[in-house]
Image (tube, rainbow, N blue to C red; front, side, top):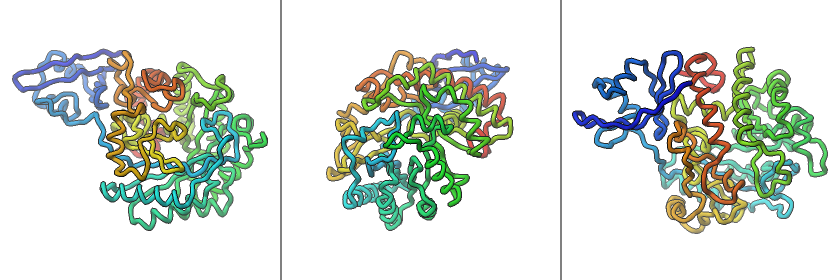
Length: 458
């Protein structure tokens, strides 16, 4: 796609200010993108020439204001800032784990602990009081670890306390699946708990990356857990999480064929290994260019599979498509920049509060549940906590995708550089290469959008 930038201009007669806008051209259509607000406007050459010549009809002026491309008296229809209003809460329920994954970013060898029932009750009470006081309509809780199902009794306690509160909630867990018996799967389904299972592809690739504590294979145990979940009612709602490294990257196409043709999986999330202080082998990490190439190959493979009749959705691709289609808000990490501390909060086992799930970095704590109101703690922390440092590079200034990225993953920067400055090169690189291809897909192969985003487009 060809691209250009229309600079800001002002029409005094109507007090109309047009904001800097990126224009992507393809097959006669022009797609305008406001990088500061994440809005899109599709037009033809006639309307584009109106804009460039600064001779806009009242109707076009109104539509541009409506979509955030222009304003009158600096009153924007859209906002680019976010109100502090956490709705997603991660609770570190246990550091115990029955696997020793090669890319684990937590140190599970020196301290194995599970949150006490008393502390968990205090944290849940803190969250419930926050939700009620701020009239939050629904909250989402994720117990994590370690392997969260080792602390299944804590998850059941969490569910009971939330159920008694009469507030709307959703609990979800990401598990390695090894401990999921038929009885546990049925109980999870009865509590309406969302489940994602970590599965790293083919048996050979999975076993090489996710061994047991005794260095044995775990694939058969994971598959048994998945089968128990399917039998309990999770067939169409089970998520699969796959981590790609240098070791299993070469099996990428085989893994997707295996998922669709053998396991009949219809949705999954593909993550890449993140460098961290606890990562034993740095050589398994992908480079920014390799990650971008992977995302492009992933999109092409998803298109090929869906055209062949295999309905499959990958959640990162889905969320980026939704960013373009509806200015999405679904993904706390990649829809509108990192929203850690704004929409997401983490709690460790002692009641300390964090803006993300980096509970291994004590300097990121914004306080404890004993220190008072959550929003006040976040507001005060934004002025002093390194986590909230702005992320920016010269490349951001003229980037069409800034609204969706805003410097990328804060956690990734901390892992790789031990400080928050610059931008996450991985997310920056992939956005610059993937989003233009997604725009082309929206325009030229719209029939593929529904299976790729796993929903009906109205």
